[in-house]
Length: 498
Ligand SMILES: [Zn+2]
Image (cartoon, rainbow, N blue to C red; front, side, top):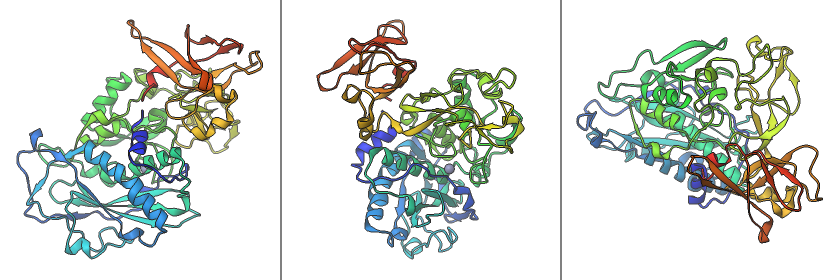
């Protein structure tokens, strides 16, 4: 089960919101202030792990008091507590002494939030305080944005930040899948505040010396496109292992979009549904890579047991990273992460639902960068951040984990929607004859690991009187009375129970 789903269950969610947020945190430029007095000292010798303790976060909700009661409850009681729990569990810091309250000056976050008197009179018993605000901006297409405002004097670690929700895009529709999306967005924005931000890259330190890192952020031309690369050892090591590319120089950061996107996120072509890619994506995953980035800042130790597995690009080698996703000569895709033919239907990478390859139909953009013109006719995919690579675009109306969508099932109650259900393509039909071309179905899988390391897959079939049907051979299953049923189940078991 994904962590986001776990968050959802733990938080007794009541409300919900939208899908299409755009992250614009870096449009909120603010000059980083400094907190902590000059007498602050590190607790003791930094490299000793035993000195690290869990990060303590505080949220100040003064700025949302003018929002509706429901919006306040949604943000304060539903979104923020599980996000706080995650970061406080995932990250450790070295405390500084003396352990006084954290005081925040009146102008610390510029004009984005109003700092209440409590901040400079009483302060916060915390390592970081984040001011939570809400605005109503229906013409601005984002759910939330964020900014780091101040850093600790001794370590450079962020100590003050702000997150601003756009109430125009908070629907309060109580759907679990949209709450999951909102939690992902909130985690995303707070991650920017805690370290994944262009304003903070130059502040990263070597934890042994407290000296700022140098040379860890640089530009490189990747597949013909200028790309920012972030090279901090914990992250680079994990990326090299994941992709099986020992010469990888660091994390490729987003190379498209405006200043709020470029260089401030992981590259969508490479990281796909990692939650720190540049736009909202269904089934986002909090991976080891973001945790490794946190460790690479020099401010944190990370608990990698909280990372969600990523299989995208796994063991695909340097070629996956450093060659074009579509060969301009053959028009073929080299890896299964990239789909073909364009506009065809397919299951998403994590098999949570269905989508279309690249876009619903080929769309011509005359200004498309020549390096992205794989098909030679300026065809553009719908995703603005994928280097124009064709990936399955998840359609929210075909989400197997959205239990409210079961009413749309082609096979009525023979299919299963809800958490844990996966997407299959098949030719099953209710009229005892196979479909002429595969369509999408949702079933709950059961995976038994075999001695050879592979899996034996069954899927639950048949509603309240049903049972598990064994998939006897890879790629096919014969369901009695329902014609020949072809399913493609690669990666089903890899993702089962995640
Ligand atoms: Zn962002």
